[in-house]
Image 1 (cartoon, rainbow, N blue to C red):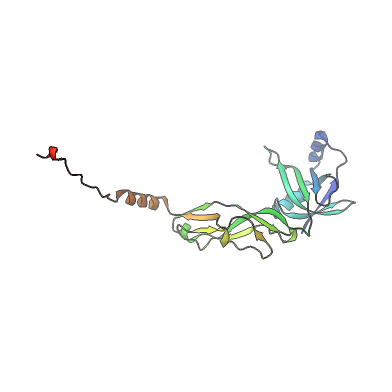
Image 2: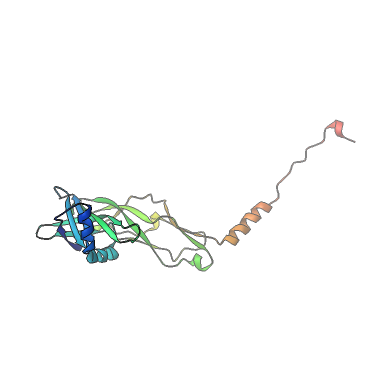
Length: 211
């Protein structure tokens, strides 16, 4: 489990937060399981960025509060500056290592489908998987192996390989990816359908209409 060192904030408020960011520290809060009251913290920007780059939001970490205690927690939320894109705040949610938890993990595609090599188009429909497990068993992502997919073939949630200790909560019939046929081929099929002759029934003329 990854670790992150934090400090308790001495001052709070907008002005204090700006000052912390200017000094390379990011305001944070820790709350939830095992935390009696929310702890207002600061964390060094560089280690935090490295942690997020390696594990991402939603990962399980040990939050080590300097001169205090350690807390198992999830990186629950990360806020970014709307223009600069820099981290401006992070939420850590305390968790229990002995209780199962429900969360989502990203689905990462692996390989290039055979259908793509044949001119198909990949349609990636499901990007996250809802799962339940103990925190220490939570995978950082789930691999979707798609190299074998041909034209017009689909990979469903039931086809994904997940660790034994992880329970998938997402509907097994959900579509993860589909390899669509090339547009020209699809248009040809539509034209063929449109050109199929229809059976017309000849309506006999009324007696008064006969010549």
